[in-house]
Image (cartoon, rainbow over all chains, first blue to last red; front, side):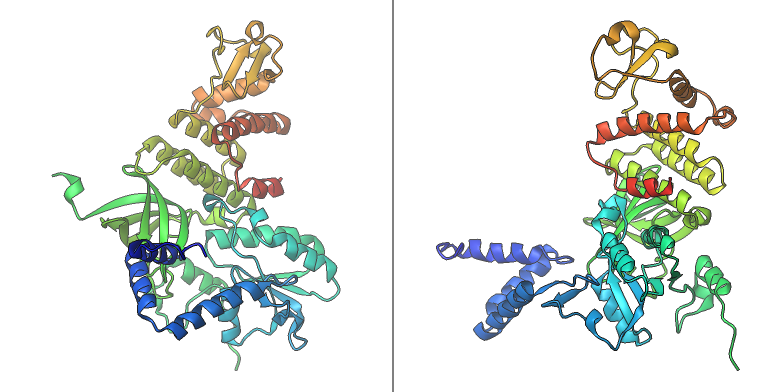
Length: 207
Length: 252
């Protein structure tokens, strides 16, 4: 093992702190706290933690079809109870959790793993757009609608527009998630664009 | 009073980019007239209740109240001045605007004020938003950015003999960064023939006023030639590909 012969306490602890510090959103102080917590934690708990971490790393990969994280290729897109005619295109796997938890959608997903953001060095080639287009071209008879569920910000809109241009030749129904007032929100505090979108996409009330 | 001692400051800023940071925060890259390019933190912006979210979207021109932090300055209040809605709803304009933001980000360094770049990007986005000629404005911006960051190639005098070159008989060398006259260009394969119209157009863009330039009728071939010349100079200086290029290509 790389660290077995390192007898210096400070070196080992510092290496552990550095390892935690590499996680997103973990600063040096939090890394220190996590490192000392791990040292104080009992042996079984730590073993369980490292085992699950390694199992996840070994077994989870990307689904060939929807590009979501999946264990041994058994993904929810193989589930026959889900509507195969609608594909909801999302930025991250975490968006799938949010949409599924809302319980309003029973179609299939496609994960892009990011959005076009040139200033962060992410172009269309760095995303799973090519996989989406080949999925559509291989299942033209089945797929009827593409829902572009990228975030309603500049990068999300640009990605949605770019994909819609590529999907256009397949003559599918291309939709974008509605924009408007959030549930429990207050019109007085909403910004101008949100209000104008809410008015633009207003719905007729059903009696 | 020394402004550095003030705990907070107000500034107008172009929002260039943003990325998620921590649980609900974002790091926002802004370009300001006075403070140059800066990275600031917007706390809690990912929560649905954050009043900042709309005002700090990329491509917005916003007025910000920023509090000085130990490491990063924190945005406290934001108010959008112009969100360039006409750009956001047109793929052609949006892809060009993203290209402009990428250029600004790549050609500027943090905490170094360059008011020419700021004025130029705001003016260009305003013109694009107001449906003025999209492609001419992008070319003008490229030249203005190269000029204000010190990367402008030599388009008037020969790089070797320093005498003004004749537009009818000029060669261009991308690695040397400018034009050469026929007698200095020799047989070097890097010296490429440049169209007399293209060089005249580039010179006009550099020295004429905008009102004059927008009256010039430029056909598609000449425009593509000017675009490819400026593009090659930009890529030679950056030494890296432009990520927004593919979006621009699909617009064509």
